[in-house]
Image (cartoon, rainbow, N blue to C red; front, side):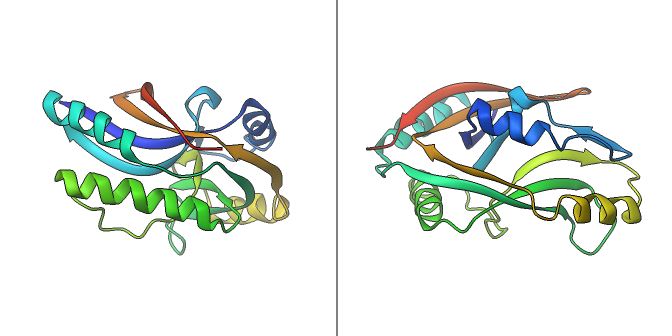
Length: 179
């Protein structure tokens, strides 16, 4: 079985910008910058035949390049003890359109649709016993955090292996968007 997801990679300039705020939060296990991404669609465990079909069907997704900007921070779950620190994105209809096209072709292939509503975000850290008061202070101190827009030119199919030190993601396929 192969654990899969579809994502957008972030340019080095964006990763460098994100790395500037990845400190000072107790209980935070920061995501390594080489593993950071924007998940468009989690697929889960599939066998080799379905992996091949998924890889092929994603080639049929046609969309245009678009700009995407990072803005704001938050945590999941929103009103309970924080478990994930994330950075948000400015509203982007093109991102939602791309995600919908990817989801539609996967569902037609027989991949179960996701139950949760798509909430575009980039995970910065997984949290363990992080006091809510420290999270509140961290969020307040970074309330105006944003990064300039970057151009999304492609999306990727990734495999993921879970290890005690965290997930290791491997790029399986690249899908270019039209200019």
